[in-house]
Picture (tube, rainbow, N blue to C red):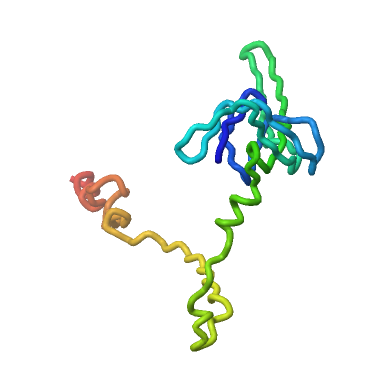
Length: 177
């Protein structure tokens, strides 16, 4: 069975055994509260009446959300304000919807299936599965040297400078004539 409840201005689809985080509700951890604003209820694909239906929940904890930074700025006016905010919320565990309790629903699903190999008795079953080995982080490899990464040799075979191709001797010969 599931229900859609409204609390804190938001709607939540819940089932017995679910954990939800809602806006801050009054109460301490361990207390039981009732969510009376049930908008919709159903069982599988069937719709059920919500007249007099309430959702019972247990408060797990009163906590705060992650910090949100609020930064205001007006350019060219030397105005900057930086604030932080942590929204308070309540963590709930849904214990019952109407008369259906959470104990009955998860118990059938959580029951372990009997092991046929262990009851056969031919050989002892392994105690535990081997743990997977942790992989070592591979060291990053340098990029492969390709022709695009290799620079051509400089032309300074008798050249005046690296920028010219004319040999020094040719320049001296033209000056001498």
